[in-house]
Image (cartoon, rainbow over all chains, first blue to last red; front, side, top):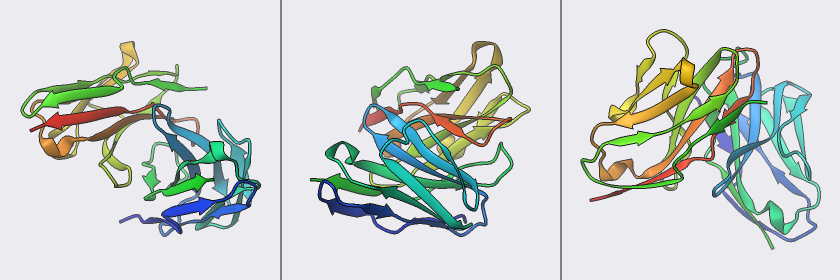
Length: 113
Length: 113
């Protein structure tokens, strides 16, 4: 089974703090994604990466950055957390060829106070 | 950019009732289509997918979906729902020409025993 592991399930951070959300997948997938899930808005793509050190902006990249130094690891960084970034963050991965299934981690609940 | 519309935001059904959740997408090319389910407190899981062939796709737990190309639709159905089907359901689209997955805003299903 594909396993996508997010390092933290629940975090509480203060406004202005730098926040790192880590994600690791164990299936050698080329593509990795960070989504944000909010009630009534569904899943919105923040960033995705199709290879090591490669990244592309999704629909809502503002206030976020990402890092992919190794194939299995994809990090989401909030440079200066704000209260409107309180949300559920989902990491996902998929094989390179389009048409393959995307697999999700359990999510990280981030509260910014 | 592609978009995915789920018309029902919140559905409440009694056990044994039939279910149909609507999903429409906007993209002129060839797509792969998915339904994902998120049970309370759990991560997103694949319910079923359509890549090609028979437009009527069967998934897990008695769910099925029909791809109607002329209507750009991929509606989810189940003849008789159970209390355990209470969850949030997301429709997703992936274009064959790209690696991104686009998700609808989700439908929250509550099944009353």
